[in-house]
Amino acid sequence: MKTLALFLAFSSALAAQVAADANRSYNNEKSRAVMVANLSDPERLTRLQGERIIAALPLKPGMTVADIGTGAGVMLPLFSKAVGPNGKVISEDIFPDFLEAARRNAASQGLNNVQFVLGSEKDVKLPANCCDLAVTIDAYHHFDYPAEMLASLARSLKPGGQLVIIDYYKRPGAMGGRVDAVEHVRLDMDDVIKEVEAHGFQLVEKREHVPGSQWMGFFKPRR
Image: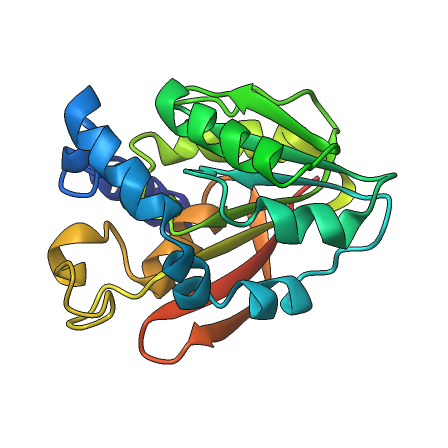
């Protein structure tokens, strides 16, 4: 009973921590247009170390990978190449203007294996058992409803599928001085892991992605 009480208390505390600061720039169309420009910057892929992300993921030709919170879709070409012409990339976001930017980016590069899905704050809106891998890059700290989002992500994964979270540490300088990560990021790595594990997943592996800036966690659903 004590363990259950602690679990419920922890879950309730985390549920109360909505991503208010992180989502302030997304509240209106004008501010989102600025964000689209920032997310479309070719330098963003360099900052993300996109090739290193792909090398770390268990992707194979023919797989289906979902890019959750795709933004302007800067990772889509790398995902598309990794799964090949017989694979599929699902580009998901909750903002139509972000998704349209991702669509333009994919079209400009001739990506034929990308599908676009408009999700919601509580549901990624993906079919059940559709993905081998769901990847969220710099987006988990924007989840206002993590419990619901994690439930929908678990449903979307095929048996043996994994959720991969890449996000910033909640510490000074983690976002390079552009934004105060202490204020912007909802939870630090250890608390994200606790939250994800409290909502149906089990940690498989964690590692540092960009030293002092970003971490990477691999999770599998508890079934």
